[in-house]
Image (cartoon, rainbow, N blue to C red; front, top):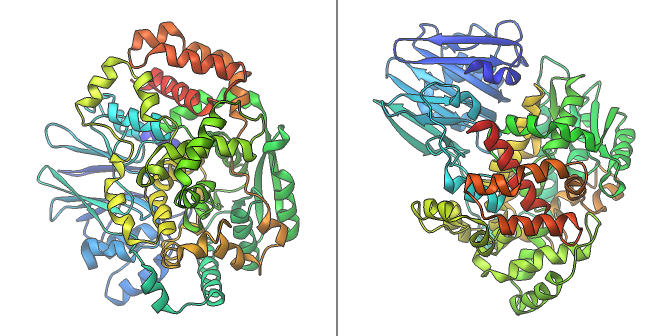
Length: 609
């Protein structure tokens, strides 16, 4: 099991084997390089921990615990967690500030505790075997290396993947293996498992926000101080660190704050493309020059797609996010110089940076549904633009959301196969296996989130949905797997839980102000960044996949989605796949999301079932 995750910790390996429990770790040494070996125990060996991540406030916690009489043998944050558990039991989770996934064995109580950080930055999978044995690990490959863990496809997870391009927790692609959701812990006792939520965002309605009396200038000041504190905490390291820099406002904010806090040397890393419409290197260079960084960049060329099978293997389960390529390659670039990077991930979900928030807001206006359906009929009848972005492609995508009622519409902005599409695509065998689960609707996996959304104002409710689903199960998965594939630790200051809680306490129209995205964040950054950096159009961390599928990936696509293979495997009907292939390869339609998802599934299945 440990050999499958050497990339997550190439520096050290450790194993604890007791009478009832065994744990192993692979370590990427960041803090306390000499005495931080794991698994690690308390003084008498009754409590053991295997830990992945960083607890940024461990220094203050250590002082508090020492004052209460606890003795420390190391300088590592891992030992702090052991003593915090001894002092406060599972309530200690509320005190941790950072990113983590860990297992903690309490020999006296014969109890295993698994826990995952609030946002879901670090992964944790588990399964309960028929004899009551709990098996767990950081990645799926770790679990399926266990000789008694079965690999059986979960049809509901496949359906969710093809709909959303990711698999929402607690599902995994395997039927009997589960993700521990973000902000949860698991207790295993007497052969039984129970999961518990220890963190969530508390709704703030408009009246309570008004009573708070916070002005916009005061909110900007408070947000700036929180962001600065978050970056400062993430500069704690005993090894060199740097930053990803795209030139957008999020990564530029992080780099600017690192410079303000005196980080030196300040190394930054960027990825660009030969296709000019996808290339943001010029903006990244401007930011690097402004803050005097030691800047490196890499041009991603189509031949890098030889990485496809390697990256899908690192993901362990299907994920349709195209940006795995630049994320891995910029991580590889950075790892040649540093072990830790800070990234700008999370700004869009916390401060309302995506276009679909604009679409959702427009969709709630009177008469929007009727107008939208008419526009969808027009845009659907004409071909897409060859450009990456632009009004026409945006209209084509977002007008289709008006086919759904407003309650489900937010998911449509993030859906890539509708119920009608799936009825055509799914073969009878897959339809039958799904009916055994329940009638599948797109919003079913999100029922608990939908139940809490009415407590927020309409804009913040949309952010809450993305924070709990898309961010945790797509963005965080991509960043963790691709950075760890390069043995690089990525830290996300914008996702510090104190920053997130403050942002969610602010009125929604301070985040999406009219149709201006990230309004309060942009106003806050006016004191740090030049105006052109703040006001320029968002590009996103994407790649020209629609072109690559027509050229460099064409043979691989036609091989894995061949009629013979599709009919033999029995999951899908071939006719709709052929139609998508023909229209996409001829340039008459852009089916890159759908075809890439099917290709990823086929590559995954070939290697994993």
